[in-house]
Length: 436
Ligand code: GUN
Ligand code: FE
Image 1: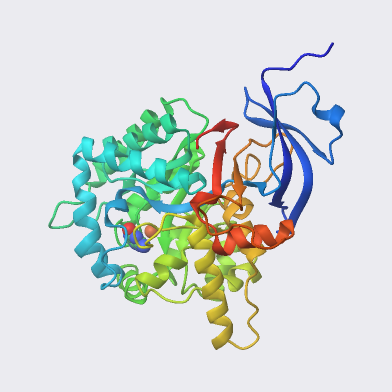
Image 2: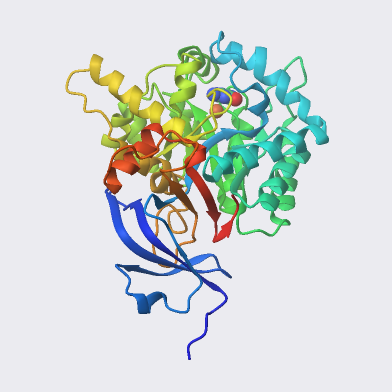
């Protein structure tokens, strides 16, 4: 008599994901076996027979449901959630001064930090974000609280304590000495959480917030500790001019970061709207990723970002909500914004091929995982990868997607991408653990 093995769980039903080449893979009927101790996928069977799932702890998905990999938000400012949807009368530099920095200074209040970060983690998970790469706070205590919230709620998260040492009259900066001391302590404190899901990421805010000395220190620290790096690049024309004025000896915005040793194969750069061909070529050499933030680029009127150029340049590309430059923390919204923007570009550019929903779904999952250098762990379904997944149901009673006509699985997936919302995301798993 065979017994049910208690540390194994099996999902049986339709499965949709992408491969390394970005191709969409649709499995009508499959089984994914998860070792619930490690959270890893231990077997995948296409067209399983009844014997394959006999005596197992099985969840059978209904005909209107399918599994997809969890969404990856490669760029989100946790501290900015309270400003969601406000302040779009200003462009980047004025927006930062008027709305963003005043809010961010409030995070000296740790109870405020805990309340906001608990909301950020719960709400993003509800929208299907299984991995978030966060800009946290300038303040170490608040940044640590974000790590604790992600840990206790169960999200996979990179937590970036911000580094900013350019003097400001409102005191919203750290001295170079404090900056280095505080980031080292923060990395240690986050390590002490001792979770495989929570990692620190070196986070110089952008070239206008840090001097070269600090950026070089951060580059060295990232190398010594093998840490990821995140920052902003080439988002807004006034910002780019200011970077030129501040670093006149460097040939480009990207060259400034390169001189500091900040461009690695574990660096993610948000925006990149105005990157030149030479800058894209340099990023390719460094194997540095670009994070596309279409909602923010539109709301802050930063510009039209041509993702096809990054693709042609062979760059890794992820998606970022860029809350609260972007007015939504749903990666589905970022997917749609990317698709719409790409269509708009096709109206005004000769020979421009719009991105397909398949391309953008890849960016939201395995593409983002590659950008963050976690594609050996998550991003699609493969034996030995960790099970970060969403159960999607396209036939929920109160939703928009009641099947009024028969649709193929691919059509139902397409409906979810273009017209679905969090109500269709009925379950969320991170490392095999159910978090919604
Ligand atoms: N550049 C520097 N800081 C920020 C920020 O908070 N949001 C955006 N969108 N760009 C930035
Ligand atoms: Fe940002």
